[in-house]
Image 1 (cartoon, helix red, strand yellow):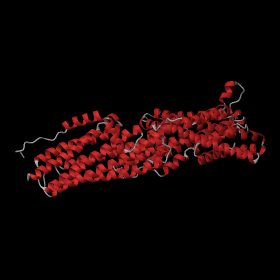
Image 2: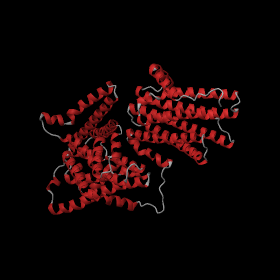
Image 3: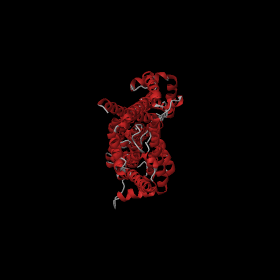
Image 4: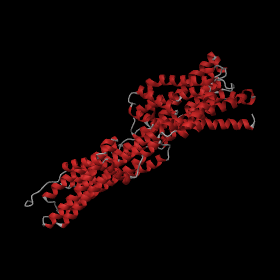
Length: 597
């Protein structure tokens, strides 16, 4: 083999690995995080968990990615260890689908149908169609489909290049002699383990083995131990992922390790003593790409069938290795515990990571609303515990903004679809509004505390007016948060008219206070307090308007807030003004006779 052949083989390997990467990214984009969400929600049944693990892995073409995701689920408290076991078992079956696709490189024959199955026949067509769609397509779905086609074409081209390059090696005595050494079960297994650990993909390492098999120089006696080692080496990614995680995630990573080691150890202990007695004749035959795919699938399916009734043993082993420390209590409801939803492992599946960000943002919005409503209640009756809770909630919301903001910045550097990129911008806008709402809750609480400390109180008229104002602000907060949570665009259109009414209420309440001040029915000091409260109310409604407008802008790909707000009002002028009129009547301030206080 000359230097040019070596370069060709290395180039083919590079194309193969790159194609697998592009294909995987395209498939992840196509799933949009939906597969991971299904995994999260439908794994309570162990058999269903196995089937889902197999299905998801078959689609995203990576058992390592699935297992790392499961480690993240357990670390975040989304999934229990018992649920994770089933998914891990299924992932080992799902990853064998790639081997079946790659076995097409070994198709031989001159028939028309057989020719079509060869990568050298259909890969160029996929590449042409994919590149055309990628350059001319405008829709995101078309570009994702094009990425998948190009990735598959590059993958198959790399596989075909490697296979064609190694074919002449069958005549090379040095190469065949080296492969004979790998027929030693222990040495062959170690080679497969190291190869998979280095490239961190069992699918890729099995593909390399299949490419070597096309040369005809690799026998089944060599291929089988290498394949066993590849099955064990696949757990390295999960172990690395769990190393820096919590105890639960470490247990999930250990379950993956134990399962792979046990299934390979049982196979080796049973198979090779039997071979010593029976002498399996097929071991001396040249292995084919299809044969490797068959053995890979049969081995993993059989392993799942055998271990399925004993999955509790894997859990028990994980708990024995990492027991719960005596006297340690779990912290629940803390900010850090809540934001474990933002596990860094989810960044490998951007669509799902974005969904987790949305869930965390919904929690953040809930805390901001709770703090605001508590602060409003303090205006009627001040309570030190409630005031302290408002402060605690504001600190919690600040923590959410810091953690979410940092996570979203990391996520923005990943391969996101155009739609996901827009949603990420919306989240960045909205978490800022949630944080400001909690700041206004602190301001309102401080106004209530000032009234308590100075023994101040509003007049009857001021209390009645403020009650109407408070009701309107509570309604706009509830509506905007529901809009954010449900992404209800129809409901979003109702926020801006209510914001207009709140602006009117703010102005009207201040005017009425000035009239009472002139008549000596109110003090200047109370006027300052009232002004602070109403100003905070009005600013809260502004942030609610921003949240609703962000959702509406998302549908029109426009993030110029003020420009959009103006065009939105003008566009819906008739309906908008009719809704404003209706809401003014609903939130009408009390009417008083001039001679009554």
